[in-house]
Image (cartoon, rainbow, N blue to C red; front, side, top):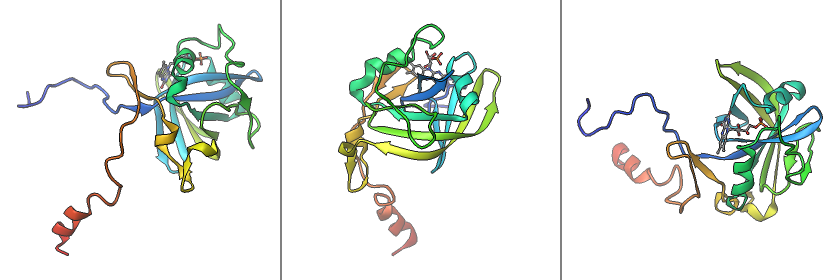
Length: 192
Ligand SMILES: Cc1cc2nc3c(=O)[nH]c(=O)nc-3n(C[C@H](O)[C@H](O)[C@H](O)COP(=O)(O)O)c2cc1C
C-alpha cells in the first residue's frame, strides 16, 4: 500500500494514443486495420503492436510495406468500423479513396490528412503479437493541415484513443511551447 495512491496492478496507462488506419495490400488488395498501439522509436521509425490473429499481418510480411494514415475526428465511424470487422470476412478495400506512393505496395487513404508510407525493417515476435517496425519512406499530407511549413495537429484533429475507458477523444488547447515553458525554472536552477 502506498499512501495517497490506488494500486492498479500492471495496467498500461500510456493513453491517449492517436488512432491510426494502417493500410496493407493483402493478396494484392488494400485492407485497412485500426491500430492505436503505435510508437515512435526514433524520428524516422514507427512500431505497430498487432495481434497475430489479424488478417493484415500476412500482407505486411508478404510485401514488406505498410502505411500509417491519421484520420480526423470526422472519420471516427469509419475508423471504428475498420477495428470491428476483419478483412477475413469483409472487403474493406473500397471504403476509402486509395492511392499509392513511392513504395508501390502500401495503400494509403486520400481522406486522411496525413499518410506515411513505411518499409518493414524488423519484426519482433511477442507471444500473441507481431511488433512491426517500419522506416518512414515518405509522408503525404493535405495542404490544408499545414501551418508555417509543418503539420498542425490542431488542423489534423486526430482521434485520440484510451483503452482505460475504451473511448475516443479529441485534442485540447496548446498549453505552451516545448523547450520553452520550463526555461524560467532552468534559469533559477542554473542561476542566470
Ligand atoms: C480503437 C481501436 C484500436 C485498435 N488498436 C489495435 C492495436 O493497436 N493492435 C491490434 O492488434 N488490434 C487493434 N484493434 C483491433 C483491430 O483493428 C481489429 O481486430 C480489426 O478488425 C482487424 O482487422 P483485420 O483482421 O482486417 O486485420 C483496434 C481496434 C479499435 C476499434
